[in-house]
Length: 228
Image 1: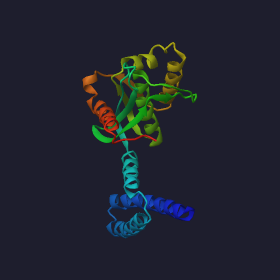
Image 2: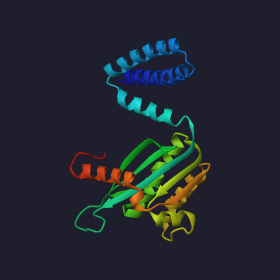
Image 3: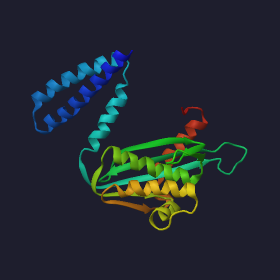
Image 4: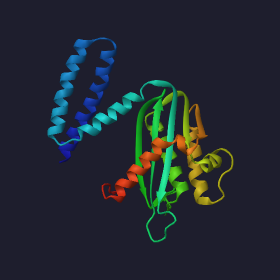
């Protein structure tokens, strides 16, 4: 089993290298070399599929990496978080967050995350979820994504419809320890990104991520999504 796993990992790495090598040869107009690489890619994909490897996830990951290899004039990141049953003590609260990233007005990627009924602070402490933490979580996931893929632009603008979060980050830290701890982590990550901005927008301008949050919560309530 371990040998198969290691073999799949090596083939996935080889395919990733060929993926970007193919793109480089195509950009240089080297069609013959690109064709040779394409044949090798097909062979690796076939073997990975036969071994039960998630080829779809690999291709999606490579497409995402490709999108963020170039530098943009402006990257805009919409973030959102939402909670259901937050004020109904008879039901368990559930939450989700989402972000959507645009590079020079073109959608690059979007993701949604199920949070559940609790959230983990940077210290490791777990506390009950609420709408504020759901918004924090959405921004944090977006920041981690931008960091992971080393997104590069002359301006990277994070947009949120949560005015209190923007105020907490830019003007006055929240007084409660649990909120303050999370905000300080957000500030640290924002400060590590060059040319970054954080702005508040009206809720009606944040429909994409709001829709992603609600789609995920709807799936959970219908029993179509289960968390580990």
